[in-house]
Length: 155
Image 1 (cartoon, rainbow, N blue to C red):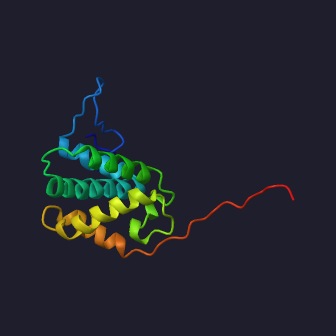
Image 2 (image 1 turned 135 degrees about the vertical axis):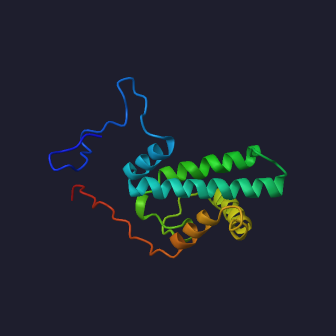
C-alpha cells in the first residue's frame, strides 16, 4: 500500500489483483470485499436462496431418506423455487412468501413449498440458526406495495 502526502494509506493505489489476474488478498479478505460490493438486493435474495435450499434439503433428508443430494421431486421443487426468487418483482424489499401480496407459485407447487416450510421451519433453528433468525426478521417486515406502471394506451 502506498502512502499519500499526509502519510495516510491511499486506497486508490492498492491493487487486489496482479497483472495475471491472481488475487493478492487472502480468501477471507476477497470474500469480505465481494460482500461489500454486492448490493443489498443481491444479499437479501442470496440469503433467501440459502434458506429455501436448507429447508428443502432438511425436508428431503428427513422425509425421503436422502443424504447429501435431493430426490428428483425435491430437486424440481428447489429449481422452481429458485426461478421464482430470481423473478421476484420486489427484489430487495421482498417479504417472505407467506406475507407476499403476489402469489407467483403455481397452486400445486405452492402447496409443496408450504408443506416443506411447515415441516422444516421449526427444525431450522438448530442446523441453521442465522438463516432462521433472518427468516424470522424478514417475516416481520412490512409488505411493500408494488408500483405498476400506468397503461398508456389509446383512448
